[in-house]
Length: 217
Image: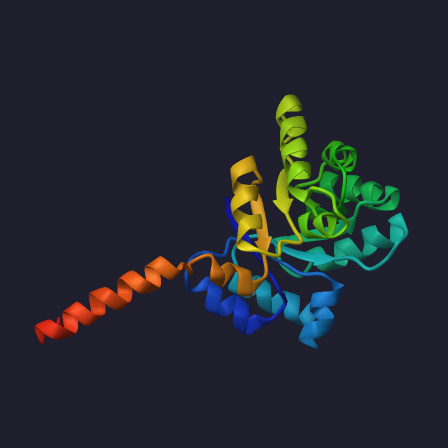
C-alpha cells in the first residue's frame, strides 16, 4: 500500500518524507487555507519535495472552469494530480484532463456507483471518504471493499485512495480490504509506529544495557 500524507504543511511533509514512508501528498482547499499559503506557491514547493503524485484541487464548479483550473495546476509540476469533485461536471473535467495525459484524483466519493463512474471517466485515483461515512453511521470500509470488487471485476486501472482516515485502524483495514493508497494525516501516520509493548520492551532492553556499563561508540 502507498502512503500519501494529507496536509499542505511543508515542515510536516519534509519531516515525514525523510522516513521514506511518503509516496505522495494530497491537499484540498481547507488544507491550503490552514497553511496560510498561496496555493500555487505551496503546491510548487511540495512538488519539489515529493517525487510521487501531489493532489491539488480545483475550486470551480462548472466543467469548463474546472478544466481550465486543472490545466493551470498541472503546469506547476509533472507530478501534479488534478483533484476534481465527484459531480457530473467533475466527471466531464476528469475525462478531458485524463485524455490529455494528466493524472486526475476524483474526490468526495461516497458510493460504489460513483466510483464506477469515475473509473469509466479515466480517473487515476478515486477517493472514497471512510471517516465521513462512519460519522453518519455507515460502514466506510465496506465501501472500499465494494469498490475493490467492482474494479477487479472489470480490470479498471483506477487506484483506490482511501481518504478521510481518522485512526490507525482505518489504515490497517483499508490495507486489508485492498485499497491501493491511504492518504493519512501526519498525526495518524506517526501513530502507526506506536505500540505500548514496543515501548515496554525497549525500556527493559535499555535498563539491562545500562547495567552492563558498556557503550557501542
